[in-house]
Amino acid sequence: MPRKLGLAVAQMGPVHRTDSRAAAVKRLVEMLNEAASRGARVVVFPELALTTFFPRYWMSEEEAVAQFFEPSMPNPVVQPLFDAAKKRGIGFYLGFAELTPEQERYNTSILVDDKGNIVGRYRKIHLPGHADHKPAAPFQHLEKKFFAVGNEGFKVWNTMGANIGMCICNDRRWPETFRVMGLQSVELVCLGFNTPSHNIHWSEPPHLRMFHHLLSLQANAYQNATWIAAAAKGGAEDGFHMIGGSAIVSPTGEIAAQALTEDDEVIFVNADMALGDNFRQNVFNFAVHRRPEHYQLIIERVGAGKPLG
Ligand code: ING
Image (cartoon, rainbow, N blue to C red; front, side):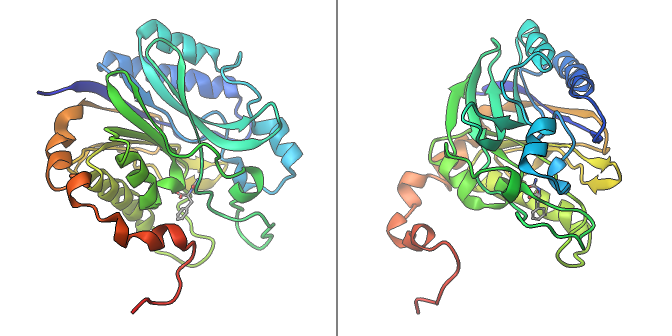
């Protein structure tokens, strides 16, 4: 029996360092309205959607907090998005830099339901990059400096008629992210990403950025029988290019919709949440086929070690 959920991804083009949050929110509201006109009930926005990808710049934590973090959510600047979504009865995923009342800093996403309630929060666990200053690099990737590792795990919420989970950007490269949610019977994983197209560590062919992005989504969707909706913030932010490639991937592992530009662009699928049922009941029936007694290295070891043979 199909269980249709109108699912949209709202990709953003660049947010430049001098762009205001209000300007970014105006763009998000415009895309939410377009998504609504196409039948969306849930819209996924990017990681750090309100500001430029500031971890590319060397600055103190205090400077970053002052310019790029949200001490409350919602807040007056973001309220128009909450209002527009509630008026239209649409839920959404939004990524932003979170400053907690205890002054902790996280790369965070929230899940807001179709009544305007924040029903879920996720704090990014797999933080890529470095904490030290690399002056010789063309840009920095200071997520390990500006953010603490998320402290709330990978959760799944039953809301808007589906089991919906969240992750952020680099998390999509780690199979553990999706298996933990798969073991919570997830049917849709929402994620935002900001992925630089240039590798500062070695001269990686640029086409591999898009290939690895899509490969990660397709493999994890299939292997956990879940939909994945991934929203890029892409294009050149003050000259620093990031990939587009926003996509909605089906539990079959197929790409159901993909963005064509590196600008603000809405993609939509009337997604059947039951499409994963056959996979969950057969090939990926975890209860019948998984053998955790042979997986202990995954928990015991952090880094790769000696062969056991
Ligand atoms: N960005 C990138 C991402 O994981 C990256 C960083 C790119 C890591 C390519 C490894 C390879 O998509 C964020 N924000 O995590």
